[in-house]
Length: 508
Image (cartoon, rainbow, N blue to C red; front, side):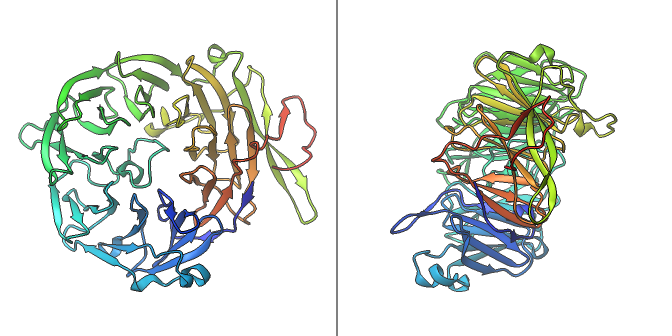
């Protein structure tokens, strides 16, 4: 496992993997982009060589790749502007040897001086751009070929980042949910755009579905039987839409759709209890068979889409005796001093724990966002579901869906800031960050703790490349790439038993 050098960036939202690799004459090149004040820097991931530098009009607040990786956009909030650039040909000798100040390449700009622009993302066809205005004014779909607006949604219900954001680490960078935008989703096949609307007459919520192939025409409006609809998600196979109520009410509504014109077959509701705080996080399984729902009652529920009943209910409490099986593995992070030729520091390793371990939890909590299952993350093969209970923020729970059992517990020393599954299913890797100098890995066979060799680096977040061979680690103002060798066996953890107190021989 190797690490790159550290590279400065402006903010976490300015570090993005290209969603696909760009073919060249000899190989496929995967890009990574980051922003440093007004400059957008595009690097080739294998060597982190600079391929292009784009100069924007002001400081960059957000960076998003087009789905085909041929263009990239930058949101300039201070200028209420979105700038777009085409990625230059990396086979050009000017780029290959020294990088290119790509001001002569194709570029475009979208401005909205009246409504403003707080966020933007690409449509799945890479030919349209969606901008979100401030103050709940409008959402606009722009065509980059004609330069005009093809659709304006007036007064959307949730047009901008909200305090509540459903957690799903498998979101693509251009997924609006990854940007904190509620109530606005493209179907996975890119044929439909759905948006939440509220009727000003009866104050009822509905989901409006627009057909991209029919000139962004409204083809269906789905009334939603919720008190105050909070958000919705398309299923991975686009055959269902799940909508849920405000966190004050636990209520799910699932629409079963035909593939033609978004016609509705039926809708079903799921209400496990009443008069209590409801849903905090939600995610579809990759095979569209289950909906994982984390709620404020500290339970994970796996809802079967066929029966609309919970196949599995797991209570996240300090007493885990009823959840353990013979296959359950428990790991606790242990830090022990390590001396080398230059300085003395702590090394993180995992210790194997026994079943009577006590899970750490917050003693006092006045914030309601820290009362339930704040994070739900599916593995890409739908075999595992990882969760974090906000009242026990240092513990990662990994559930095995087949058999509905607790597969593993990872007890960290610091608050978990991100859970990221490797997108390549065969590797089954989960990366964990805790805002420390280490990055942690879990597989069904092993665990590992690896220290980032960049001085002062603290891993706040992590993002896998599309091929699962590189993990981008993000610090507050720096990024670093971790190169994971997929051809070799995955590195074993430095594991000790709970009774072993001797210092480890080496640091991972």
